[in-house]
Length: 373
Image (tube, rainbow, N blue to C red; front, top):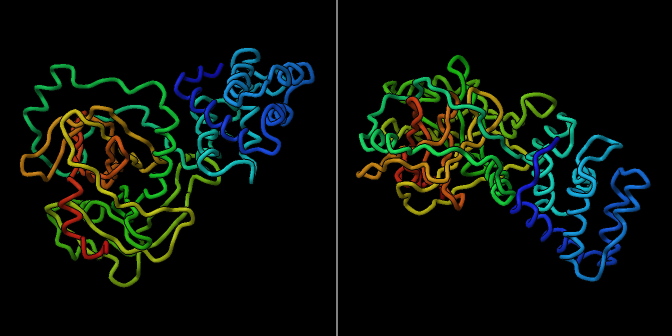
């Protein structure tokens, strides 16, 4: 049985359906009745779903959602949630815009509104909806760092809080938009990391992703560049979308800039991936106990969303690094760290036990500002 849709997501869905109804031709009850007719319901259920609509679009939208989630629950004809049967036809071309389609797909994927996992995974890939990591790995990963004593004290005070069971769709939609900027960085012989598309041909990742350690000279990064692939849109572990879109580094000068101290490498790619959106907006200076959301490719797998609404445990007084409790793993090196407004705050680069560390994005951008104009 699929989990119940949260109050916030029900309200978001009601508001969007009401908006679509107001803009429909004809507007009002016929719009909601048509949604019921499009769904794959038996005749008796369809008949119940066609009744009870009046002139108010918000009332009608709530009536439809209550019919699907309360009156019907599961569609006995298909085994899908009744709400899934209503939302799936809305994902057909030209039915709604991309943002509304992402909301509907996010609901279907997050709440298992369609029982066929392959269909849900296809929607996850098409609308670029990242999952959250299932568990926190304890391995020592990334370069050696000095963990702040303050972090240890805060841990003893119950710093770590559980992730919410469900994510509001407004957050999922923002995550999906940012996910269009994130890629897996695959380095032959060294494994993989994660990267961020800053410009149509520039990807930011960690120095140690291409160099293995921070002790190697810059020439080592050049040596490891041939054959390196950045892979966008790898959102599923199975199916045709699992390989995403492969883009190679430029043949000449693939390493645009690098700095071992700040553990970054700016890569030039040779080609473009469809539907990818460069992103380089800096957030405000982070504060202790503020949110950190990390889009990443842990263990070289499909993209995941690590999140903590109050994850920052320590900020370097020299304004170079932050430490946080957001879930990360091997392959997460080079992942962008976002604040609660989904703007950039750091580049993840190390993990020990349950703590992660990122280089603040502002000093990195200061190093590469000539390439961002």
